[in-house]
Length: 248
Image (cartoon, rainbow, N blue to C red; front, side, top):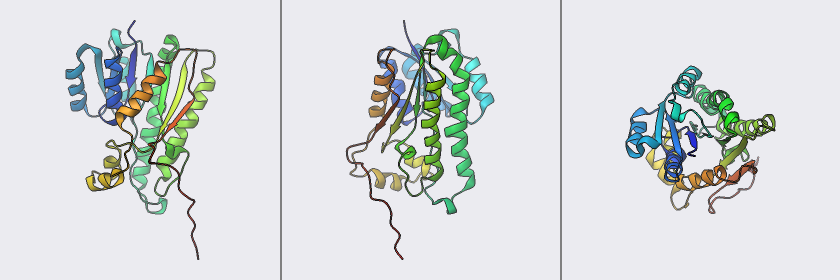
């Protein structure tokens, strides 16, 4: 029987690569995102294997309306991949834009919560799975990471809480925490500064969307009696720095 995955943030990066990975391996995919023109391209590529939902994940009413609109053949969701998220700005907290902070909270926390809450009853019926995308920024702070890192730390703890609450339901919950990966992430964070993105990834041999999609597919296709609680992964060329020391 075909399984169905709902993947948010499907128009780029990890989400886009995951749509391809799952469909090429026989899954049906609900691709969700804001940019309908990109979702339409995916529909052209994958035909009946894909259904798309265009909504703003910051709007809980749009989420509810979109999920309620799913056709019968896509309603029985087996896997939710909460991938939609973003970082905005690189300034220290005292110089940051509060609106950017609010947008990160509304996307990375509120949106993820709202969609998960909506889909959980179906996942319980299907004895399915949730994979939440966090970040190494949840565990390792860095200058300018402030609210972004805080939102991703929430994702880690929320995942553990879900795992506890869903005890006995058969629903698996995993939090995947990637490090440096070359996607549109830095372009979004810097408002389209291509040179900043190029400089960050130059010579670093970062992970790719395909690398993360491979990891998500591995987690999703493990035997149903196994649960991977957390996966933290980095490119080999990324590791840990000394603590900052300010000297007077």
